[in-house]
Image (cartoon, rainbow over all chains, first blue to last red; front, side, top):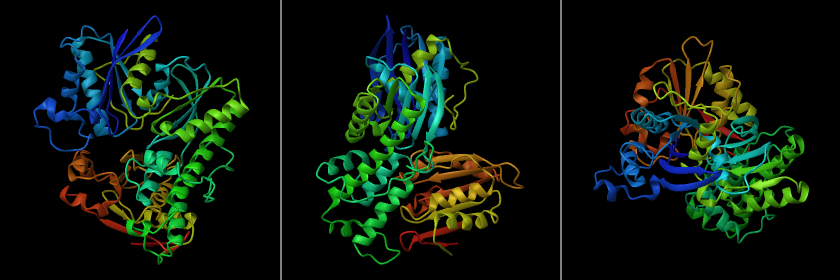
Length: 349
Length: 140
């Protein structure tokens, strides 16, 4: 089966062609709008706006993908139906509906979060069920149990900021630029992760929820007091340049995030006894987090396998949507192209 | 007003929520960690919303259905933190949603000034200032 994947849930427009033959998944094409030069393809008429302007990206991407006008080589279409930004989601959903109707091909509605989880199915061995999933990105921090393909049970989630958002905002406080995750990781390499005792919020909460807003505020308070700034004035970049221990702050902050995610995930392993743990989402690219989870799992639960996506699939992409769509298509879980609606609050069920 | 804890910030938000009517557009101004999202959590708590209320920084827009309120059916929590141009705000298609007077908008990071060109006007405005570790000034 060969499937066309379409993703436009927030910042990125992405398309892919993925096939599965004799159980083997092959990524044939994968495009992400921010990585291609739309001007070159479109002749310079694309307005100079962010990748969020999905509508200007879809036809150049279809052309670049090389898909035929009648879609004869495609067996099914998978699209992210939610959750996300409704105006962005609609563009991918309406495109998928149109193609499915014109080509008379089955249409699969995929959940964006489910897509992230399926990013690890591009490699072997694939996870065994039940799988405990930790999904960490700019917009999400969630723990859920996957009992089988397409069957999810929520366990915990962030109550305020996502872990990736905390990375970005702390990077901004430290003057490290955007995106914050890689900037903090790089700076943390030269720092001592035990230098500053930042809090580990929610470790004693007795559930599997997270909170990262307080940790971000703790970094701000630390800067404020170490720079002896007057109350009400937030540090700016010239103040920050007076600090000599930025690597220590970055390393200590990163360690706090890694500890929280590792400890909560390991206690969920203890409680739900999964056969595998899947780390996914943009923050899964963080090496300290990968190593911490994989090492602790090997130490405490050596029979539980650890899975994290290839770095090229950790951020938003359409390969993961196509792979999730493949599994739904195999179960003939199709939707009607005439009635499918983007659902900004779509849940994993 | 002065808040000395997250709970007090939510309490102040409860009182503020009682002044809100459908069609209100509220600007929430203040630095990182000043209490804006906590305040929004307090407002939704006051409206009887029991599910988690999370930061919209990455999702840009979170929507919450409100039941049993005389004038408000929906709270729309927006965050312009990641935006660089007014076009990005325009791409959200807010005009139509703002014409519906059963909606209330709570907007973080309006101080970037992008909304002026997009024709968004506030009806209420709140300023948050961190005075210390846990102390916040909330001005409206």
